[in-house]
Image (cartoon, rainbow, N blue to C red; front, side, top):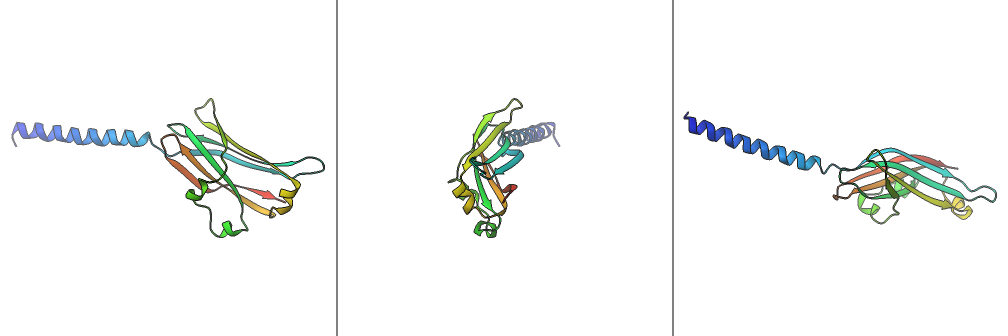
Length: 151
């Protein structure tokens, strides 16, 4: 093989590998959000005090967190037979996300629970579905991010 062909082959290989490396780096920057340390807490109303439901989680996303959608659903329901989808999550309530010191956003969803609410809630296990969206548009959907008990 001539010296010129070897040089051209090596140069072509460097271009291909360099392009693959650039693609890999670009893709690494677009990793989907990651949920960390998700917790849910339900407090039923008692006496003259109202109740509450709170969900918290950490979210890491290389481009930053755009939104976090949260849906609580009873395991023993229609949704229990067919979990919510990421598409359906677009219409549910959003958590409030704030940047944390370690580069993770801390997201919290909280809502009051009235006596009337509590009277209609099915007792038993509930699931939390979460849809995290990064600023670059990548998403992470978890139909069962964490469970909690009612009743």
